[in-house]
Amino acid sequence: MSSDSVILLETVNFAAEKHRNQRRKDAEQTPYITHPIGVARILSHEGGITDIEVLQAALLHDTVEDTDTSIGELQIVFGQTVARLVQEVTDDKALSKEETKRKQVEYAPHASHQAKLVKLADKLYNLRDINRSTPTGWSAERVQEYFVWAAQVVRGLRGTNLALERHLEELFKQRGVEL
Ligand SMILES: Nc1nc2c(ncn2[C@@H]2O[C@H](COP(=O)(O)OP(=O)(O)O)[C@@H](OP(=O)(O)OP(=O)(O)O)[C@H]2O)c(=O)[nH]1
Image (cartoon, rainbow, N blue to C red):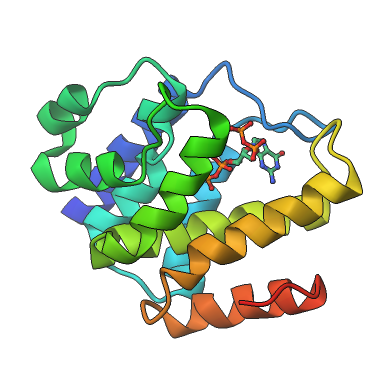
């Protein structure tokens, strides 16, 4: 096995252990780990990304936001670059929901190229997931608001990966949302 394969297996195992008790918000309560794995797969399979640190950051991108994982722990286990990328895509939980959403829009154009890739794939996964199965309790209005907000974030990420951006453009077009 190549060393990259070993590293990716270590990373996916770490993420799976951390998210082991979490579920998505869909009616089926899908295990949460399907999301980070799906984000990494979008990057490799659809975005053509082979940069292992980007793929690792995708697998780990919700560990600090949603589990007991710290950036320091990621630094020790996976190194500075991966930890920094996860930090870049982690929301500040101390802020209100509105402020968190505003910060994502504000920060997107200033993120590193690697972090922008993770963010694009994250948004693409979540928008497809909403189309597949509306999260429990979400009204049609809330879904539309999520698309409108996601478009504002994606606007700041443009010029990063043509394939992913084309897929996103199509999803926004289907909802009548301007990118
Ligand atoms: N579409 C979808 N999303 C789900 C599901 N389960 C959990 N989520 C997460 O919920 C978030 C969207 O819900 P919101 O109500 O906007 O945010 P909240 O998590 O802060 O309540 C998304 O992350 P986010 O913080 O808004 O954005 P991101 O930065 O993680 O992309 C997404 O990862 C699901 O079944 N479907």
